[in-house]
Length: 256
Image (tube, rainbow, N blue to C red; front, side):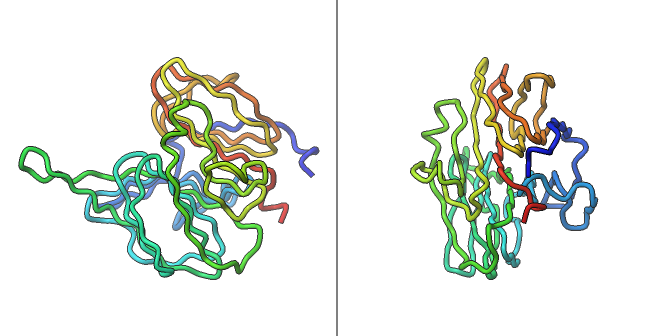
């Protein structure tokens, strides 16, 4: 099925993304989302949504529904409060991976309740996070929630599996998603460090913080993304401390 696909490396710059700006939200969308729609930009592999969100303190997404979607949230700065209709609640912060399986239907809210006291004054901190949606293997599953601390694993500077439905990661500390063809990896690359991308029919690289150099393509700035098809194995190097997110996918929504 994927053998007929031509190898491509498609660089998407940060400024090219769809943008939603409200009084409390600065959101950049890598794919069609909400009122932004482009029929040529709806997904890559099984990844349908990759939103880069900054939410001001005391604000956030009020209770809203989801169905038949695996939703992974990765916080870069600050903290995010999650509550859902299955009774789960939690505080998501950098180094803690969170997955919500919407399944037959779930309601949830995400709020920035981060306030801090400094020098006798109260300060309000924004929360910066990336939220990613992948389609599940099957619809109509029971809604679920999982979060796990992987901050220690990230200290290695290499690619660390954050979320996976693939059998080869069954014994890792990654949260589980209901898609056996997909895995999310993260790396906090130190200055002068490097990682090597996995090989897969579909890869999606997102530069969450800093800047890196992609072998064969040059410098990628913060917010840039790359869609790889039928390729992989390229070297990613950093001249400054940087953080990347990489989706490894062995199927596409068109294969369903």
